[in-house]
Length: 106
Image (cartoon, rainbow, N blue to C red; front, side, top):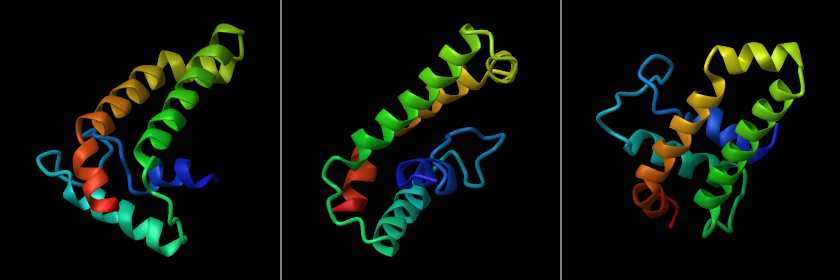
């Protein structure tokens, strides 16, 4: 599992009250957990980390949509279940809290 994918899913950076273990009212636990993840895995260059997380999220969404469009039944189910929309919401969530996340990483 790539580190960016791990941060996205294990911190988690979802912003979805149905699946997120933290209150939507506060982002700080996620920022703190992201910093702790980076510390634990020795990720020293964090200046562009938020952009890289968003890039990874966009790549994941793009992969789902392309595979679904190509006729892969598993990805069609994911798309039909709202995975593309969900990832797009998660991207928005990270972008909305970019400064808090950046501050925690510096």
